[in-house]
Amino acid sequence: MTARKDMNEPALPAGEGGLVRLRVDLSYDGTDFSGWARQPGRRTVQETVEAALATVLRLGSAPSLTVAGRTDAGVHAIGQVAHVDLPPAVDAERLQLRLSRLLPADVTVRAVSVAPDGFDARFAATGRHYRYRVTDRTPAPLRRYDTVAWKRPLDEAAMRGAAQGLVGEHDFAAYCRRREGASTVRTLRALDVSRDGDGVVVVTAHADAFCHNQVRSMVGALLAVGDGRRRAEWPRAVLVARLRDSAVTVAPPHGLTLVSVDYPPDEQLAVQARRARARRI
Amino acid sequence: MTARKDMNEPALPAGEGGLVRLRVDLSYDGTDFSGWARQPGRRTVQETVEAALATVLRLGSAPSLTVAGRTDAGVHAIGQVAHVDLPPAVDAERLQLRLSRLLPADVTVRAVSVAPDGFDARFAATGRHYRYRVTDRTPAPLRRYDTVAWKRPLDEAAMRGAAQGLVGEHDFAAYCRRREGASTVRTLRALDVSRDGDGVVVVTAHADAFCHNQVRSMVGALLAVGDGRRRAEWPRAVLVARLRDSAVTVAPPHGLTLVSVDYPPDEQLAVQARRARARRI
Image 1 (cartoon, rainbow over the protein chains, first blue to last red):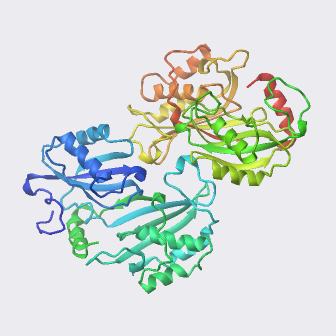
Image 2: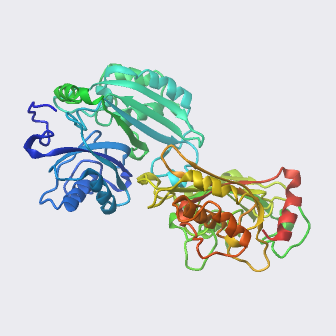
Image 3: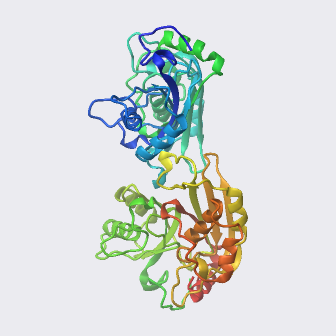
């Protein structure tokens, strides 16, 4: 637990103000959501879960959820993680059951637990894992919600080679939507491309954090290599130029799923949160 | 190719009447279909694909499809196989592309090919493979269309043991909806139960053929064992009694998917079709 006050802290730190911080593990089908973040007049995951919390706990106003990966409209999550600060009387296990009964079928709360000291779903996270599914064959109807159909044949070996040129610590400005005052330096730990047993090309991406649109922009560049429009060296050349290239298209959202989020051991949570908050990543 | 005339033959055999038999490989998400078979006023897979064939080929009346596994309302298919007899001018590859453009997103034609002599999607099939997905954990939102949520914990080892008691050649009358004059003797080659990496209990069933409701009835009996309502010996005792037991409930349709269909080598197709047609399985 940290005593440091920070303007970016959306709620009281655990323990302060008599509140207890809960970790909430979520999955959702992003198809019918306008993404994670609350937006007036839109159906979002954040608003849906916050409203369910308010109903279950009979709170006058909805509590605020902070999330590890703010997914865009149409993007899915298997292992999304959020936190929320609630009065200490709340029973975490009972809360999970009651939320499960109330929430619609496209969002589920997999677990609710009392967060360890210093836990912050966003700033204490040390890694995010995403998956992108795209197929150049006839898409399986049951997987059409999380698999993009690509009209041209894809060379997954060429994509795999190109992906290696992006791995490492780099300024990903060329693949990010700019946000004032925030760093675009990220450590891309892995970017792998394979074709699964059903012929679906699966891109997996692992980094400390991703900036806005980064995974979908990188996949867009890899798809240009995969279908032969660009050479395998091109995604790396775009990276090095550090400028958005209009030839990089952002791949469609519904192929993307946030798979899981990494956190450090409990005793390192506060240090990690302080470090990430300072860089606003 | 067989020259034998048979009342159960729904269309002219390949080559007769100047028609050519095409094999059609299909996948569908059964969620919004009232099953495979044509029914007045209902949206069915058969009617949807037959109507698309009529449109693409500018036929005055829709051609008739014969299918390997007539799935019920809500049941899905990955590797469904059908045949249709069409005028010889039809180009199989082009037909697949044109059907793909016309069909809705919940049914896809994976391949169209000229069928070998003696091929009959239903009667020449030597094996059908089904999969049933059920979870006693929080269901993954993206897989809610093909995974049943079970409210009580499931003991998959007990289910696995019980399943073994059903394997073999038996009269499955206790697990079948009766059809006048048709045999209920089937050879269940495998009935396996496992829990996958996401905690989903997956039942896979392989037989020469299944009678109506058989897979879902067997799964219903296994679920009664899995959640502790019945002992592991019970599904076999029901089988041996050869009478429908009202305690066997038919498991919900949306967990079930037809995965694939087996056919013998080309030179054995006609013999197999004659044999199966005689038994009407």
